[in-house]
Image (cartoon, rainbow, N blue to C red; front, top):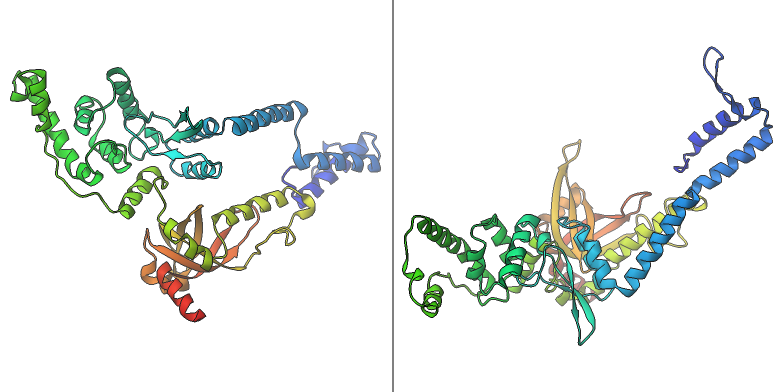
Length: 417
């Protein structure tokens, strides 16, 4: 009944009032009239049920939801950082969901701190500054791609039992016998979890495998009862020798764009900054829609769908944007899925991220061929297209043209001159 399928409801009304018989005249459903209820009263009863079915809850169920809603609202209002940290933890390991809630944190003014090998736990946690009285959320190591909760639990346990990790090599030595593999360590490096140590991220990426191999080789020699020069002498001498025990392949730090790209790859979001921040003003000048507006359209559509009187694809009085309207949207290409239609024509579903989230762009063959080399992941583009607003579906943009952002802006400036 809640689906409001009018043709189905009309048939059910007839069965409810007059009943239902099979081909041989046997009564399957007696109906109201056969049970002594007049047709007018039966129609009234059915109308009341249909009205109730618009949003049907029994009272106890509704009361439970009301209590949960009030408690949730209270927590979000008075303990926003703790509330959002708990919400993020409910999607631990799901990189697709995490960015959505990180954006909510930003809208609430809650700072998200980068993962740190000596400060992060498995899950997202809050860090409270007693002086400023501001709570921040520390990114959980368990949400880093390719890491997983089991290795992180081992890393955190070792840190709690034997103190903070003093250096990258100290970390590698202390977890050498545990199930923390090279892929996990590489992902931690890419995510910036070792930034408090002196080596650059590029240096660690170039050196970590040889350092781990050296440690593992040393462990094997130790099992055979062999003693190296690093195992003899005073504690001070051992420390000095230990410093030259490992060789780092020194490299200058990666460019900011590359660091942000690694961050996005491992965490699913940009934390240190955003590649579009420097061109925010230009983007706002040449675009007329962003991800926030697309989300608002979807929210308004969902609201309209719950009102039987507004059971249309869109309400033109309330929606700022209309189906088929020409729009301009800019952002970074984060994913491209190429498809072939039944007619063997190429098309693509392109995910583009702006400063506020991601949107799906549908690119049919003509636009795909025109886009050419612009359709490359991590490329900043300007999309000229039209809105596709559909009932019970996410609003998308159908591209007419996609160009490199800088080229598109230059073309627009020339036209204005």
